[in-house]
Image (cartoon, rainbow, N blue to C red; front, side, top):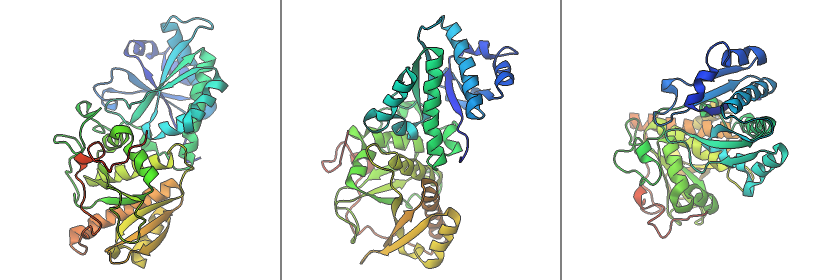
Amino acid sequence: MNFPVPWRALLPADAVPTFSGQDGLREICDATGAGCELSGDGDTPASLSDKILTISGNVEQKEAACRRIVDKLRVLQEVIDQEPGVFVIIVPSSAAPAVIGSKGAQIKEVIELSGAEVSVAKESIIGMNDQPIGVTGTGGQVVSAVSKINAILQDLADRGRLQPTDFRYRPGAQRPEDSGGASFGAPGRAAQPTGGNPRTNAKFVVATQVAGWIIGKQGRHIRELQENSGAHIQVLKEGEVPPGVPVTDRIVEIGGRFESKAEGIQIILIAVDNMPALSAPRETLMLIPRQLTTDSEIKDVRQMSGCEIEVRDLPSHDEGLCTLLGNIESRVKAAQQFLKRLEEVMADGSVSLPAPSYGARPSPETLPEASPDALTIS
């Protein structure tokens, strides 16, 4: 087990007094052995009136605590016996596709096995990197569904696709005025570069189908990825690849502040690994300036990330194509380390960025809605 994932739920503001004091969360913790914590004022965005309830411990402890919490909420909802009540949990947005599964197969299985009704929100909570999931049913059905959904998250964590930071609120990840339809790179966005070198982009090579999924229908998915990471993310047009890379592949560039780019790398790679209808890839293709593909540089990145790395020279081009092999955690670390090294060598002037010999870069505002070459897949 990588780490035990916490179970998180939204607690309505009017329910908070019920869970305070000796007869509230403290009593539940004492009785079950679980850890229960309510978010404070700085732990949620100002736009969210609910509190975030986090349950920690082993699976049995979390299930027992969840059942007691659900039962208390059912009393507040004036739901009795076998009547259905509602309980809302939250999951990292990057994990939502895995919870749903290919063509909804995973969430259908949760519904069939638990007997509860489960509804995954289409959008993230404003200001957060999490999506709410509504679970409706009897107390037993709700706890069963919640346990099965969190088992999916635990499996992702065990495979390195989720990290502890994915379960913590990160202020500034989104701004309310930016959600739902803001143009890429629009003035006033929180993603404006303020640190690091804005010219050092992380660049990945992906198949056309993957590029289309990253963009999403009418650009909705790429907007969400940008808002969640704070980075600028753009997909270059078809054919704009360096020599030696199949012309049917696409280049994905991640730019912005260093911290945002590092976050963008993690979010993009995890999202691609969880892409519906595809088996999780075990390799990531990244374009790296040739000066950073020496044996000593590659050895350092291998040691720091635990990732296997293969390098292929591209003819008449100043970048090499690196294949990152390993679990998602090691690939993310390797890609982030390459980005860090690029920032460092750019700062001391030992490396100059290669001129893109494979076509002009489109502006972020033209992708994907205004560009006839932009790929969209629903």
